Length: 429
Ligand SMILES: [Zn+2]
Image 1 (cartoon, rainbow, N blue to C red):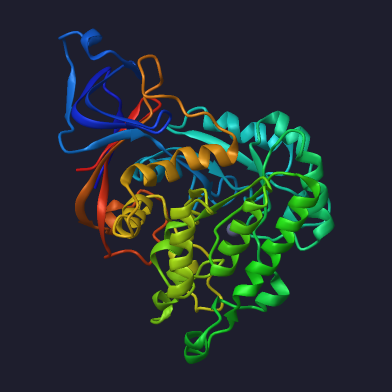
Image 2: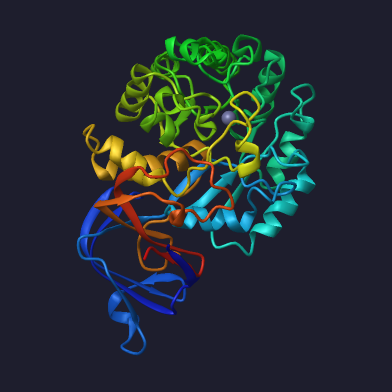
């Protein structure tokens, strides 16, 4: 069980390998933190310095998750801003963008402002994604530019697809000049036809309604065509199929200004996780076949997909104890993200620095954020990793208010041992 405590006034991180994704440079040495900022180690002074032995560890910029569900307001029994922030720190994340499918939905400038105000006291930086449509109903556009002025960094009805192509088109047109990305949860619901898992021989054998790959790929294709036509900024979330990876790659090669993300669970798990009817493995879009999984991995390796995002989606035990048809879609993912991604991408041949880029530079680019370099004067926003440590993910590693993950009991290679952010630090013990 890790712990989260106030950051010591003076901290020396000793003997680390330091990778700075803002500059792409790696060096060996110490990092000193005083009053929440990086300073020259010589200027730390001798009195009362806390030391962190980082020999053999890799220190880098804190991770950025551009797709999480913190459930506040409305469902704080699943997750709150505070519990979600603790889960983030335990996963090495220092900045998180939250989706607006709360109760009520974040679909007005007032709601964006109120969430950002509440976020002031959190130990992470919180970004707000506003709804594309009023009430996330997909019919009438919300006040996009007003929400953008209030601080919304992107727009999405996540969980609900924008079924009406004209609504998506107008959203892309309105936001084109400000450059705020539109993120559409791409699933054609009539094509999904009540599917609760990937449509395949396995879904037939299990007797469960299947969700075909075309439900995702057809809508992504529509979205890409509309992005090309309007010149608006489209970000494709949680790519799950080989078809989608190819489409995104093709439109990127044609110069369409799009970005895309993949989740750790689509990188590391397949539909096989549902064989025992584990509702914790029920997600939207669903876990797919091994061929799809490999295509998503390739997409991250060759740059077709820009970044990793968790789609951390907490649900209560009671909700997930329903049957496969009734249980809600989603799994938590912040605490296991680095371990799972590194376990999959390391052996696939991705250098650890590239993986860090997919968790820092990539998401920053997708949402138009600045990364601060790891230099004296910058705020201390760090994660300390042990890329070679093998560990088993258990309930003790979960800081979220929810427990819905099929990864409990899995062994990962690569662990977050400390996270430093906004006057707090998490240490894994
Ligand atoms: Zn989604």
